Length: 243
Image (tube, rainbow, N blue to C red; front, side, top):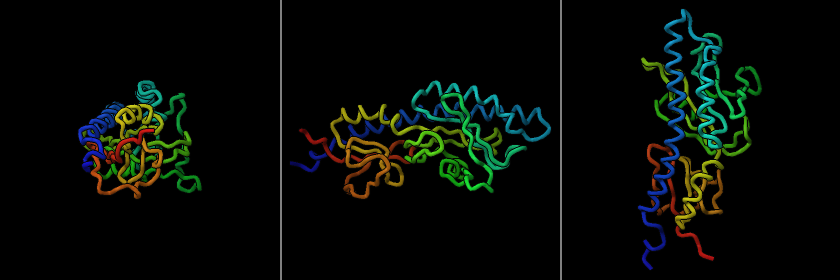
């Protein structure tokens, strides 16, 4: 048996990678919609107000956010915008983040509190802010909302002149990602896992490697297939064993 017979053809894995990229693009399309709404709203506010906008001025964003939550269904457990430090006149930090049941996410943003939620140090916020590009963090357990593994997707949002306003983001459950992708992965007849930039498993068809587990035990000689414009990759592990 040739070595190449033990693993799927690269084109097959590439097709699976394309399926992942297509799903991711749909997620970021929603974030672009939310981010554009913030940029437009901010432009109107700063043109008409003599002082910097306040948190209450962001209320019109709720309609856009709710629309994307409805559009994506089970794919989003929460979405919205997270504002840059002191960009608002009344609050140094602020989230306009909504859940599918029309409830707003409330977090402790007081630095003096033992429950302080400091989003300014989290990768889903810092990388879009400092590098001006989209990012995804996870899988991680979402203790604030759903108590399940999620991936947090985010993009930078700026004014028309380029000033950083914050991020537009969404929490996407791994279970929802699996619902879309797992049937395609299984139909390929391959043992394959989707991993993040830290080598942690997001999902896959090999029960040995569960969500959140590390891939250090995998064969490093097998080439991974990157997901376009994402810090993710697919790692083929060989054919699914027949029973």
